[in-house]
Image (cartoon, rainbow, N blue to C red; front, side):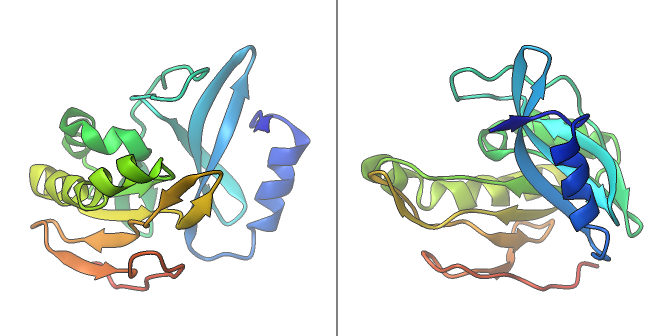
Length: 182
């Protein structure tokens, strides 16, 4: 289901988020006219702060994103990259050169089993490399489980700017991480 940031369904989402003190990054399929984007909205206390649309699309039917926005949340300059964007160091570097110190990666590594196995460690290594490339903290959130013959082991973690793992949810387990960034 695709939605526009101008329609009531998006306004309803914003209304649901007013009680959160943290910033939320919510992935959605965005409709703009006749175009569709794999996007993530940055929401603060019920207010739409902006959105990032995936630059390195690898799904049929999606248009390429049109910008490299940097957001501010709780004194942190942050940017969003979506899934496949993690494979392209130049995208992360562009954000860090604009002052981002935190890169957020919403992922959906739901893949055919053989492909999932190949990417099992590579996804984490890509995030670690983006941290060392940019000197940024990296936060990722991924799905886990099996669906329609596909599987995801999950790659939800926090990576320090030196590439070391600050915290990680165990493979194939739903969970959350609370960690203080410094």
